[in-house]
Image (cartoon, rainbow, N blue to C red; front, top):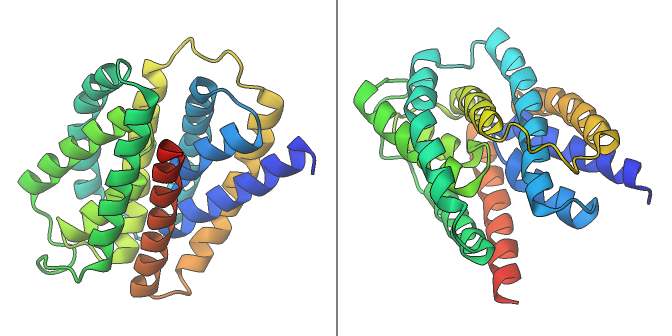
Length: 247
């Protein structure tokens, strides 16, 4: 299978995850770029942010048209996480890659387990500014530490902390992912060496198209099923990363 075909297939799968689940794009994009397409870890992280930013922004527009974005909660989450993301990113740059990978796997597993638990939050869509800002700051710190868009943690936080319905959590998380990814890209200005735009371009295009299909898929599946799918994806990614560190 050629590199271009691999890029198109991987991009479509990642777009599908972002469109349907509101997250998981960076988690899937970076390993795909490294293990399938031969990118260095540094180039893969930057390329992944480019892909996820473009795909999230496109999918956010589609979810906005259907009224599935809680703008107040999303804006609080995104704004509160920008500074912690930068600070955590500076700390992460001094740690061994194995430590970051293990931390990523553990956090992904914990987020998945939280999604599988019945929600103990208040009525759906009840916005609590203080809790939104606090959770957003924590999410930003984790995002900066792990170097990903953060949607795989934003969805559980929006469901469990704010009590958003799953569909609105998915749409709102795309706002958070877009802002966090843009902030991370700004911090990485001048690190575009080795990106191989002939691969990143088709990858991004396929991801954008996949996100539209994912958004349509989300309208046909119940929120509970989406939650279980999301949790399953997170557990699989967590297991892969932890095994990779151990082996």
